[in-house]
Amino acid sequence: MFPPIAGGGIQRPLKFVKYLPDYGIEPIVFCPEKALWRANIHEKEEYPFLNKTTIYRSGIKRLERYFNLRFKKGITQHPHFYMLALKYLWYMDFQSAWYFECRKEALRIAKEENVDCVFTTSPPHSTHLFGVFLKKNAGIPWIMDIRDAMYDDPNVERTTGVRFKSLIRYFYEKKYYSSADEIISVSDPIVDSIRRRHKRLNLESKTHTITNGFDGEDFENIQLDNKGRKSLVITYTGSFMGKQTPEHFLEAINLLIEKETIDASDLLIRFIGYFDKQIHTIFQRFMPKIPIEILDFQPYEKSLWYQVNSDLLLLIVSIEGREGGNQTMTGKFYEYIGAKRPIFAIVPDGPLKKIIINGCFGIVAPPKNIVEIAEKFKILYNQWKNRGEWHFKPDINLRKSFTRESLTGKLASIIDNLV
Image (cartoon, rainbow, N blue to C red):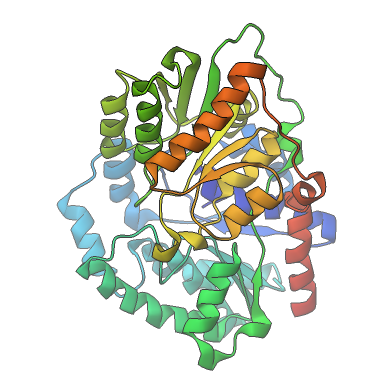
């Protein structure tokens, strides 16, 4: 996950690359040359600091047909996909094709560049195969970084097929954690889950939490443009993956409109990102009653502009805590606090809820309780209707702790101690 691929997944490795030089560490990037995603950008147009970064691109020729069918032609089901799934079934995911195609190239580069440390980040979780390989064949210390839960991903339905995959993932988890010198993840619940599941490996000393964050420089030149605006603009940026859905929020808004406790003409609810047919069906069901605007995936800078120029930012983690939703520390939250706009968060009990409440970053409602979501939204709506704004005084010091620069400092410390 690195430019020209776009999306939330690239921001963590991208910002590490940006700020590691400030700590005396030179990043060298190894990423695919022929990978596509739902959205793609040209990295030098949007991220000029990459002009100073050494980047090697290799592969993935083995997946070119898949990328063409899935992301150029928009085909979601094809016999070729099943063939790939069967071929790479035992290797976490079929993106492992990149590892088998390019591992020798990665080894050659690591030796030529005299690399001191290897850092791999997932998903896709097969990326960590490079870490295992380079440590074994070049004797290089390895740090693995996990952006989403590997074994117990709460976004995935627990079907028979998924349970079978989980057995394979458990095997690779054990292999990875035994080999890695340091293990990092984005939330305490993910780290705690790893430690509990692999008690015999005694991972406490080499597991760490480094959350996602925001880059203050991304917001420096964004201009406010809200003169003459009369509606309450609510913005959601990003996609809805797995079990995530806007349905409960829209049900709550619809309930308030039907009871005539809020005026639909006061609202503009904007969804920005890539949405599949199922999500579009949900939007279409509510659009006759609720003012909804749907925008396709936007360049990162433009997405942040929409956030800053909103009255309220919508955050949805529609999975209960008992289902694993407490592990989710979405990167979107940190962008939102970077935008300095109040958050309407539909999230379960867990670290994310605690940070929002403790930091006074917004108001929180439970994921699937439509009545309570409606009640919490009505509070904000009434404040806005009566005063044109609401009480919003976030904790500045807590906000500063989530800057990408300070978080990269934590990674730099781990690297220094390891090397």
